[in-house]
Picture (cartoon, rainbow, N blue to C red):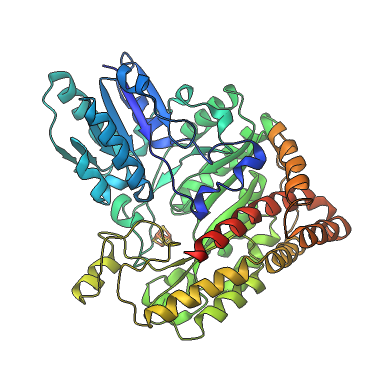
Amino acid sequence: MKVLLVYPEFPDTFWSFKHALPFQGKRSAYPPLGLLTVSALLPSSWPKRLVDLNVRSLKDSDLAWADVVFFSGMMVQGPSMKAQIARAKQRGLRTIVGGPIASAQDPAIAEADHVVEGEAEEMIPGLVADLERGEVKPHYVRSELPDLKRVPLPDLHLASLRRYSAMAVQFSRGCPFTCEFCDIIEIYGRRPRTKAPEQILAEFDQLYRFGWRGPVFLVDDNFIGNKKCVKLLLPRLVEWMRDHKFPFSLFTEASLNLAEDPELLRMMREAHFTRVFLGIETPVAESLKETTKFQNLRMDLLESVRLIQAHGIEVMAGFIVGFDSDPPDVFQRQIQFIREAAIPLSMVGLLTALPNTQLWRRLKAEGRLIKQSLGSNTLLDLNFIPKMDAEELLAGYRRIMQTIYSPREYFERASAFLSQLGEAARAPIVFSDMMAVVRSLWRQGLRSNYRKEYWKFLAQTLQQHRQHLGKAITLAIMGHHFFELTASDMEN
Ligand code: SF4
């Protein structure tokens, strides 16, 4: 059976990095790890082909080749998925959809012939048997959360690695915390499950064998959700990286209690983690309590960020406005916090009620849900009735974005961050990085309307923290993505 694996296109969001990727000559941020893993779970005798629409188009010849089409993706990919399912069905192909979008019961999945809801490892064997018999059920739902020790190596040969700016590896799923708005804990549970260190080393070996050098994203929901297991993994990672002369730089997502554990920070630094994404959400304590994000109340937020930065690890963070407890000055407080914490890449979003979350259930009970979430909290689109006047909330959100991503404010923040950054792990320099420098100097240094701020930032870096020059160029390029996106989004 010939299987076509299709990954729909991402819209232009903060996380797509669409305006930064051309500097490196890349098409997309990461390959679709879920589909590459699904491929490895299918019988090896079945021919497979991957089409990631973020990298290339889906051709009629791809559809003509296939017997069945598997789709996976997130809610933001819904419109693209819907269009491609329709195309496949027009050709009489069987369509199957899975991934986070299926668990979120997004309307786009209703177009497919079959839905697989839950983690693939659990359900693929049954689905394969049914496909072979030609008796496929309309809906497959997980009965239990699979043991990650059973996850195979992803079928990396299906992806064109050079098209991506980073590779993706997953160590754990799930998170022990209880944030009210979070869908991770509903889908993957509150008991973090992890792979064995040997599985991660095998994935690193495979990436190395395929010639990958550069960034690797540990795509965990919360990398430190199970600290005991992470502390067993990290010494093995350090050893592997040393043996291979540090070919990768690592980044991941973690909860803020990372700052409470200097041993963990030291180990992550040694393993060459260079950036971590933290869900800070808000400096307003009442709002953190409301959303039951108690782990962010244990230590001073600013102190936590600085501690991590002092270990040579960049903090990238998520912020939210729209909580019931947000006071009228929340917007200025967010701006002030982002400025003081010196977090260049701050992803500020509007609160959104994702399906089947605790927040969604509460708002539904209170009669405040308006519509299905679009799966992106950076769109100027509320799916619930906020306590604050909606117009005031949207205007305040716009003000935050326009302030923090004005080139002057951004470069000042990036400069402050570099002065706070401790000795960072040295990232390997690859050809695409060198091209990125040339393109940045040309496009940002000569042709942009913020070239004055750009050169001031680079000059300051050369004078005060020359050792971070590579990081400064990366931040300038990332900044360009946010400048472009904020300018276009805020017009809508
Ligand atoms: S810490 Fe992050 S992953 Fe964990 S429950 Fe909160 S939002 Fe979800």
